[in-house]
Length: 183
Image (cartoon, rainbow, N blue to C red; front, side, top):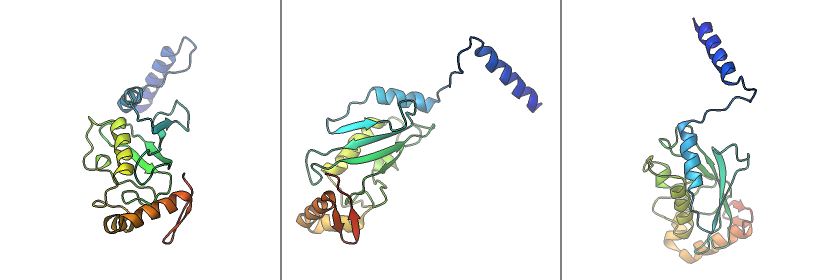
């Protein structure tokens, strides 16, 4: 019985492709929604999007954020986005590829942004996430940290925090952690 279904499926495929063209890959609902989100992007001038695997792989892309104000002014921070076929019902997986001294981004690149976790809703989109990431650089939050050391310094000594951010962005050590130059 199972083989019969496979044969029927193969025959249907061959009939659809009788015109000699390669088979057309059907897009999932998640891919269709992502295509719409990307076509409607309204990025700030400090953010760019790229597709390292080519434009055919919309489900994996990178966003570079170059803050134009705040502690991280002049830096360039790259985030990778992995989108599930369950998007928008499942939040994208976002990681910071640039090692950064930040209270809301740990040294492995995990990002603490509520809309990527408990506050994700299908009505949110890629544009919302990018603006949320940008906001982390203009207004870092010491109250919900992934890097508790950076959060404590930001809370207790903002001048020292600023010095640590500058040292990390210029390429150097902050405590026991080395940061590559990102200015």
